Image 1 (cartoon, helix red, strand yellow):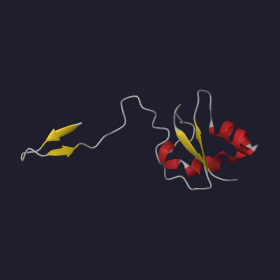
Image 2 (cartoon, helix red, strand yellow; image 1 turned 180 degrees about the horizontal axis):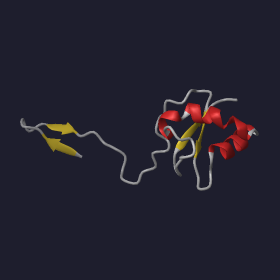
Image 3 (cartoon, one colour; image 1 turned 90 degrees about the vertical axis):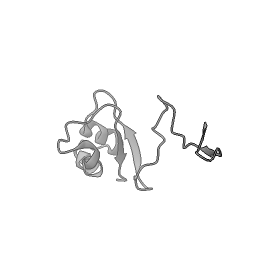
Image 4 (tube, one colour; image 1 turned 45 degrees about the vertical axis):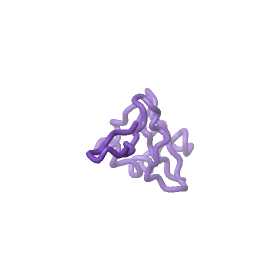
Length: 88
């Protein structure tokens, strides 16, 4: 949509994604050699590591790559969080 400024000229308005739009394709600061994973119900970092790396003990790698998102408690991941999965 446009709006009128004080001179009567039209000026474009910046657009934002529509409410409810899928933001999962938004750009991230993920390294080019990393994948992402969206947390689902029942997940834990060790389950994700087992699925991604074949080794549940590598959960620390996922936690360190996502510490800013997850916070200080690696047990508190939330459904819908998009985690960076570093290359193994």
